[in-house]
Length: 155
Length: 221
Length: 106
Image 1 (tube, rainbow over the protein chains, first blue to last red):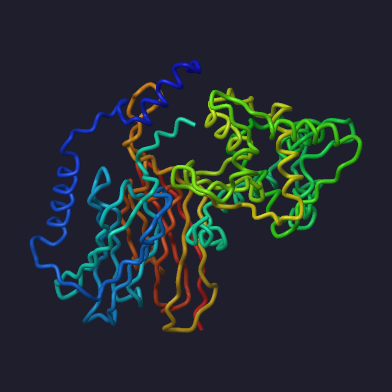
Image 2: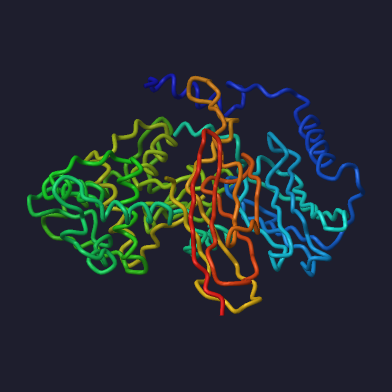
């Protein structure tokens, strides 16, 4: 059990961001590059089209630990024309992938809801992969006042 | 509390606290020691209705107990089972399950000569400056509720939803855990779980919130 | 086994789209946190969620550490025939959880 003094030192260290995990100064650029790489993996380089997919997420988030998020895609969801997958990416979390949902005509409606962690004010990206091979995108910038992934849960 | 947090709380299908209530249900029915809770108390939805609105309270032997301690007293004395650890998953689940039937009911702390000294001790604690930052609960939660502290709105601190699912904890915790967070926040040495000082403060907070409806399991940032 | 909660109607009309809300008890340890002593806490998350309807997969999700603890997943499916929907969660350290629900289609 840490002594009170040790605890305070650690707590202050964590708060000042100087403890344990020292982040490199170009971390922003690194994470953005990782996000772009994740996007490339999904689309294989295919063009991203705007429209049809809607990312519902509150624009101002007071707690980034459990942010409700819904993605809906306009689609008849028939065998001939449906949404194959929905992907969500972030550009500032420690790693870019959030969730990948695999659907099909049996879904009836292309819609998923979940709760996510956001580690900073950033743009969240939702990508819909359609049965005809096309990719549609919606990007929503959000302001996060209390980031996830920063509290080490000492208390 | 933001609109999204409230929506999470109001829908049982999406309220993560329900996972603990569900676990509490199986603990209620599980035989521990000589019997299960259900053996005496039958269906919690009816037998436990209104119970949580009256805790902390003074029991027949004169002890001030909060609901967690009351559950443990029942376990040790009536079930002949070991007490559950404070802030452990099982006690939180059982407390959440026992409190849930009181959802929507107003808090009713009765004050008689047995309760009064504890209530006064709790009131004194609430108004006492403490910690390195030398702040009392009252300075934030009575005098400055509604204004911002580090981007968050200071609440009035009414414990209407305990045990709560706190987003910061990513799990369910008791009022005493929240009080410990506050103590550490003003850089004061927090009391141990189950200490009489905390139970008296709980009593005062519940009395201060009298008339307000219970929301257990609540969701809070 | 971990707690799971599944909310869906018990009955639906043939062809109706039903909404299914699921909750699974799991801390979803990100792998990016450190202990008081500065040691990295290893990742421990649910990595996959699958729903099958009378044995046929109708929905699958791959989760990451960015999914909040006690994951909520809400999705839809068409009520095609009466039967059983099976829900399975898989994760790190051999984590598994399962839930099953009957759907009556009229």
